[in-house]
Amino acid sequence: MSEAAIARAVIGDSEFDRDTAVTPRESGAPGVYDIDLSAGWTILGAVNGGYLLAVLGRALAHALPHSDPFSISAHYLTASRPGPAVVRTDVVRTGRTLSTGQASLFQYDDQGREVERIRVLASYGDLDALPDDVRTTAEPPAIPPLEQCFGAEDGPSPVPGGSAITERLMLKLDPSTLGWALGSPSGKGEMRAWFGLADGRDADPFSLLLAVDALPPTAFELGLSGWVPTVELTAHIRSRPAPGPLRVSITTRNLAGGFLEEDAEVWDSADRLVAQSRQLARVRLG
Image 1: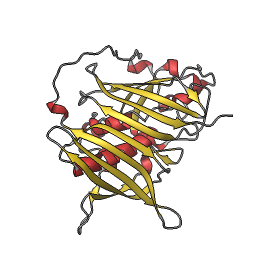
Image 2: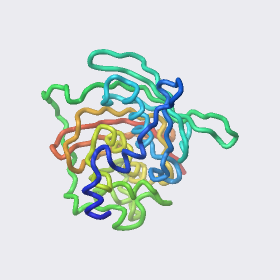
Image 3: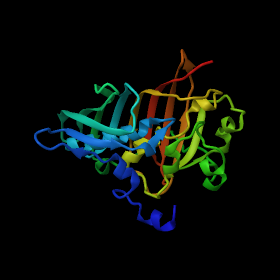
Image 4: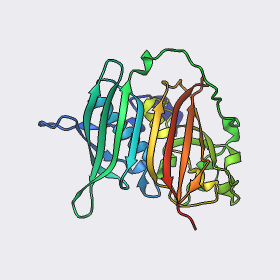
């Protein structure tokens, strides 16, 4: 990516913005939006769950009187594919400081039947109106400087089998969570990385929805391989991020019955915890 391209990539005018933009339906279909899901955000052939969360997040920002996602919970029902999709939204409640809505994304299967891919329930507000008071015991993750971390350009594809999404991310992994890529996973359910968009666009609340689900799965460091599909993901956006790269830390404490949880924290360049998430994912054992 050239320096000129990086300079042009700003919030509202970047590949991420174009690929997550939804188009309102005309002719009497309020709350219904069309989108063409881009193949550029796929992993092992499936559309990335964080990208899908951002798509539905944008649709709800159109449908609700508030523009910033505060809390969004998604159930991934069937695997989404690149191509046309429709998002249907419903306003559940509107208030002075928070509004709540739900949305579902649909595609057609090979037999021409409409299939629901993902359903979300979310609350929106105004991040700029939040008080500045912060009382926390949380601390930013200890990640080596960006130049001491490793990305896709430093070796084989971070995800076995290839991943189009890595071409659109600035993702530099902490070497201490890269044992899986060298054939010697640590056995710890940890993944840490510097995160940004490859075209230099700064983060905003919608790209935070991508960030919580963009790192390689912690299952890799547990010695497992293959697709780790998300069953449910809840993200909390805590603050509008400052310009600059993000730091993302993901941990898993419990893998049981073929399912694991992933707890993510996203920190901005001002050392603020700007997003948190928890997801339940399925893993292949044996």
